[in-house]
Image (cartoon, rainbow, N blue to C red; front, top):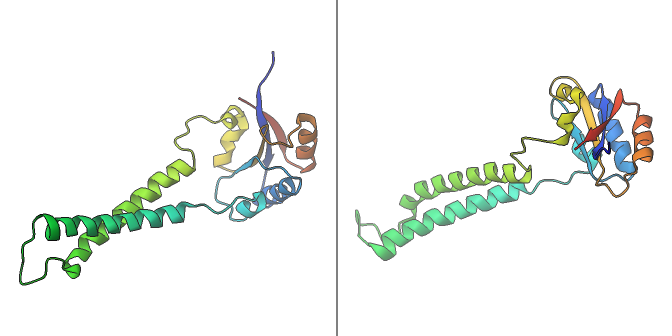
Length: 177
């Protein structure tokens, strides 16, 4: 029976081992890689060459959109559509417009953060091929894993498997689709 391979997965015992192996994978020229660990490893982004996220820019844009929406809505209602002088203030009274505009700024920035994170992470993703590897369940408790996908231009099954074994992992698994 012909198996469809998604990639190769290497299992490591410590965070130091997985970061060192990730650096070697990047130096070897592999690009389509991923790492899995039970806790965040801050050196992993640099080790795998992962670029910074655009999420902060999306949140900022959401905040600016909220601010402009809040001020624009209030301007439309109080100046253009239904102008009433309240308490001797001018139609466009910025100090009284600040609290609602601030609330919409926070609301839109929060929505941008949540939905931007979901979109950029490709979530929800209830299935991933690494779930087919039985030992991968330990990624949430005590083990560290590195994956090289077959989509990588440099991927050659035999050569990549030898390379993964040279990183001194505990074990190397074939990840089936």
